[in-house]
Image (cartoon, rainbow, N blue to C red):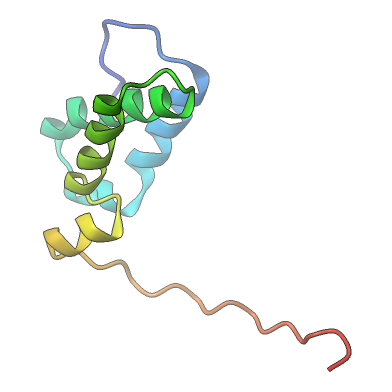
Length: 96
């Protein structure tokens, strides 16, 4: 996993998201040329979550998510598919 780019102080939550993204299945398709795009995605996403984002930040986070393959639409556009996950266990309804 690459280091977060220098130039600003990254919060613990941003560092956790960075690690989660680089450990996720989409990261198998990324190389070092994706570092800045992933960093911008983390930055814009946290600006949105903290209510400090402009509409531009929100739009950029959405576009980056698509281009990085982090959304269903982005994955489809890139031709990526995740392996099927295990089916959820069946839980009987109460009184049934």
